[in-house]
Image 1: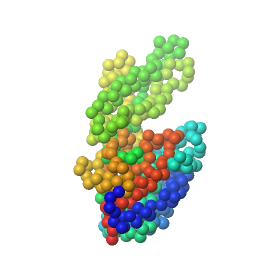
Image 2: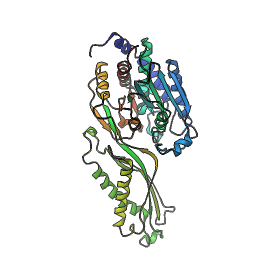
Image 3: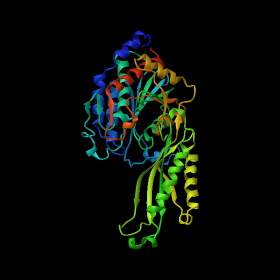
Length: 421
């Protein structure tokens, strides 16, 4: 650990692990699945925490009509009747020198019988808090809040502000971060405490949601040769898309070390047929398609559409009945920290000086809010507790020690970027 100033040491000592665990459990107990009323409930809880810390709190109803029509809106994959933005700012002079952004929405639980307990009844076991959203990313949001709490507990007044952006809709496109930036909330730099498993993530691939409609010809199943099965056609199309996926992984950025599919293509849903004894004449498949670093979304879509069209053109049936491609739901562009940004070195130094090992630099294959801040001219990266490979699954958990370690690093970074009044 490097030599710390008296103020830095006091703030690190003020990081309260027990209070962080208590807050994390309270957040996880709110089932804030995207599109449910609990998204607003958890945002109210976070707003209350920020208010208690002495922050200036901006809480507003997001204009969903504008989000549905604005040309730069990121799209949504769930229906919402309301959505709330929350920003808390510890005061200082000028604009925030640092933004800490975390999302409070979570994905559905899936088959609950696969969980060791109720996904929304947080439990502490093996040094980790278990439950839906612990890793992705209420643990990271708590790290950010714990960092601010330590600054306040140590009696420090900041020269420049630090802000916490608590956002919803990250899992299905980035509605909350988009609305927060559109409202004018900015900063000199942003750290998003998504789970990074001890690394600093400086780049995130994009992701697009696609829809394929395959047309066959119906016939009695006893004479299936008289028909054309949309299921069998889709199998051919899917095989070619797998080859397309493999081609797009070549020459991936070395920061994706360990990721087999940095720009993966996955089929998520398939619906076909209406009757078991009829050759299905229609199939609809929806999936996720990875966008390469630096690849414009329009170019990524054109490459996908071109591949499907080329395959259909060489197929005996699909040449006359081509697969229809459409795009819906969230649209995640790729994003990365500008090369040479001082933020990477500052974050690494804060991790080490707070007592952690030097973090490697990585990229993540998932679409995140990083790209929205980057597009707004705010240098951004990820540093957060937990392992993203556990997210969205029934074994989701976050180690308590990592929540605390990230809180300490963020507290130190806050002091150094914002300064002491």
